[in-house]
Amino acid sequence: MIYLDNAATTKPFESVVEKMNAFYKELYFNPSALYSPAFAVAKEKEKTRDYISSALGGGGKVYFTSCATESNTWALNNGIKNKNGNIVVSSGEHASVYENAQSLLSKGLEVRFVKLDSDGRVNIDDFVKKVDENTTLISVINCSNETGAVNDIKKLAQLAKNINRRALFHSDGVQALGKVPLNCKSAGIDMYSVSAHKICGPKGVGALWICDGLTLSPLLPGGGQESGLRSGTENVAAIIGFGEALKRFSDSDKSEILNMRETLKQRLLTLDCVEINESESQSPYILSFSAKNVKAEIMQRNLAEKGILIGLGSACSSRLKKNRVLTAMGRTMSHIEGSMRLSFSPQNHNDDMEKAAEIICNTITEYRKR
Ligand code: PLP
Image 1 (cartoon, helix red, strand yellow):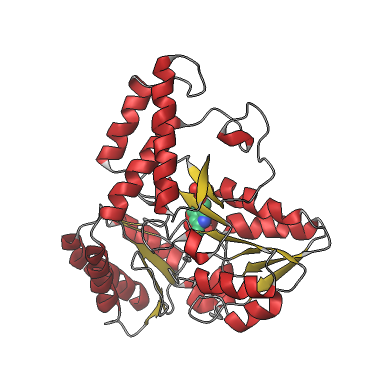
Image 2: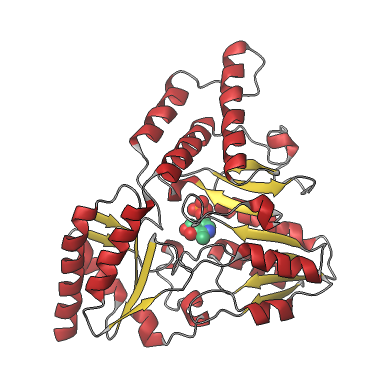
């Protein structure tokens, strides 16, 4: 089997599973307990927090959550402090931001959606038009989960802060963490959402980075964990796995990923019917393409039967007929129907890519001959 759906989730690194195991088998104590074996657990958890916070640039702290959907929900709901204000959100957001924005809209808040350029990045002119002195919150995805287009978060944050210093800037960094460098502090942003399972870590743990000096309303009141902001006994094993995954993923060879993407891209481009969805500023971990007169869902099934697992844009919305993000990029319905996503991790092997490319190209050709 060749797994090319790493933007949906990844296989955890062996060392992640090993480190987590110790926290299930021996170090299972509640980190809030006041006996010494529990202190060791709390210490490891805090070490991981410091490591992830400094990997994001320092100048802030991560608060652990159960997933990035939770982090995004927390961030977005801090935009409702001022009912007369407006919220600015890009049209390229993952469902976990987009649906929260829709829910704020249904509560009567003004939500402004920023247009995308045809390459999947935020349209800067429209962004500048949409932010004003009444904007309370801005949310722009760092790297698109659909196409891998990378937004210039530092530039957008600076433009926004020049218009309105008080507007909070949030970015969904799920597909960027460990892949596309961003220093949250020097970018001047306020909140950043991340998740472990996209970087060969465990499912069920995410975090929200919050810059120093910003006070958010608690997400879950209760026992007072996470400095009283997100109560609930911490998923320590997963938090430790998150830290280990980030270390290993950040150290992994990025040129291997670029090579794998390039091999597949060049082979796909030998077919006249293929168009690549990419941007000048592009994550090497995602290769989105569309094959004319092909139904991607059928292709996904056919390829799975041949041992190649691929994605169709967002895994969470793979069953939705209309792809919101590709539509915002101006793609036609027939282009969207034939859109597929290949995504990579350090656990893929360059040697497999020729074989994968051949099977994908042959399957597209066979389908078009029917
Ligand atoms: N944001 C982006 C860009 C994603 O790709 C995903 C997952 O697909 C999420 C948020 C949600 O992450 P989680 O599964 O941790 O809730």
